[in-house]
Image (cartoon, rainbow, N blue to C red):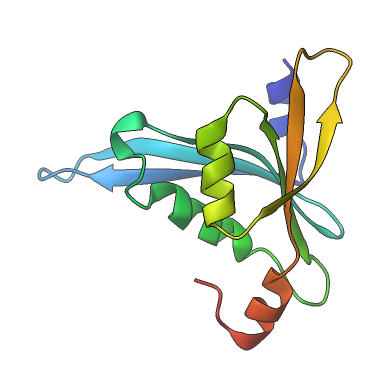
Length: 130
């Protein structure tokens, strides 16, 4: 129910990654959900099918999300990552995001790490965003 409410928010955007087989049939292999905020983009969820991980699918989706940033308004990209999700932590680090804080929520057992990137502003201005 919480996700349905989130997706109903007009600032929330969902994208999918597809691959096409030899017959021209598309299959969804990943998705990302993000929220456009006044000062940035909050990455809510990124998932890639295990058969397509480490093949650039997550990077392409994150590049799409990076394209929503602008030097004038939305300058920040951030995401929560659970402390036990090492693959996601490594992925975000490989994309230039930095873990700069830990948060503990009352209804959760462990911590979440907050990954942020504000360096994108300069890259957007220079046209160097992938």
